[in-house]
Length: 107
Image 1 (tube, rainbow, N blue to C red):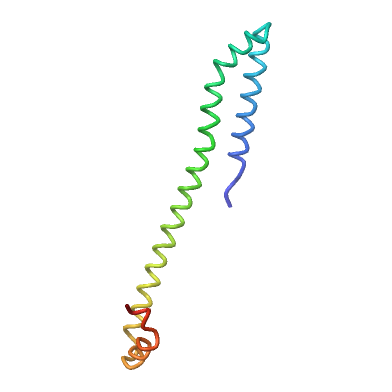
Image 2 (spheres, one colour; image 1 turned 90 degrees about the vertical axis):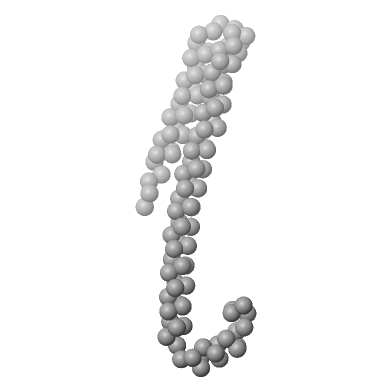
């Protein structure tokens, strides 16, 4: 079972960073105009990080889904080969009967 602490820790750390930037900007300025200038400098970095963090997690989930899909495709191929081997070992009369009763499977 995989752990969920990594994403939680990253989210809390990111929120702490944003709060630190807000408090830092507030302590370094004496008016709202100056605060707006400071925040304008840091807001770009906050915006980029806000976009990058979810994309990292979505990519990780997509990679996991791709791995699962690849495993299932390999398993389906193996099962198909197994069915062909069993069909090859079947009585020819039975095979012909199956073909006649299920023509949609043999087109």
